[in-house]
Length: 259
Image (cartoon, rainbow, N blue to C red; front, side, top):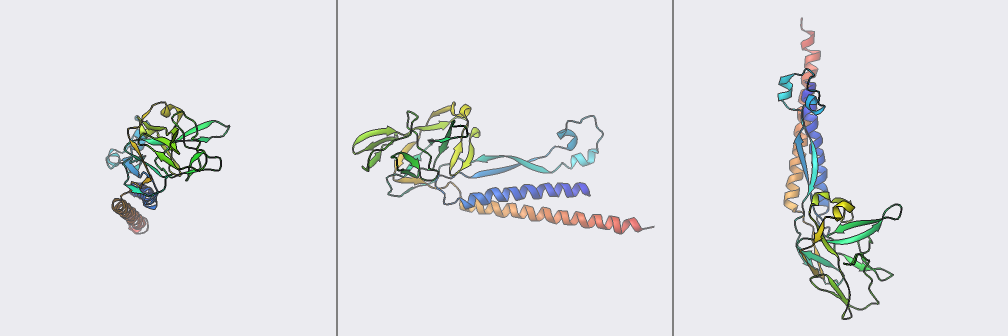
């Protein structure tokens, strides 16, 4: 009966985690460029198999029941969100595959590469083009911060070429990563990428749309149904824990007294 409680507890824990992940997706329903997470579970191996103790005697019947479930690594859905017109000349969206490149300084002064689909940009006090969300500078094709001069109107071509007052200023660095499993979410719409992964970058195939933003890729209906399903799973497993607890109570306090 202890084993039954352990199985149900593993189901409750994985259900709670799925609820957290899907609730976070719903919370970012209106976040520009947000990519939802998928939470996956997998069957847990029996303790004898998990610990590599194949020579240790075990109860084959219990092993056939399984060892419950635990979480597998999350996956990110990189599907494109809808593009919406904003009229702001500093709002850019990528139609198709690709990411904008941002740079930040890590501890020790080393430069870190960050990718984003959130094209809400602005001009800071020093004239640099920066992310309005994180404040990180937007990188050019020459891997340098993009410097805008004065207050002249800017225009952006489909290939990312930025012009100000009719003169070319810079070209946006647009990249894609061959193995997107190497990308890690870092908050503020940023994907952190290691130098190894960035070494596998390829030119983006998407095109830039000015005065537009990519909406969140979260499907509200699917996310809400997922939260409800995960919540039902949690409730069912807690009910099973309660059943197992009552059976144990009867086994100890009722049947053990007979005779």
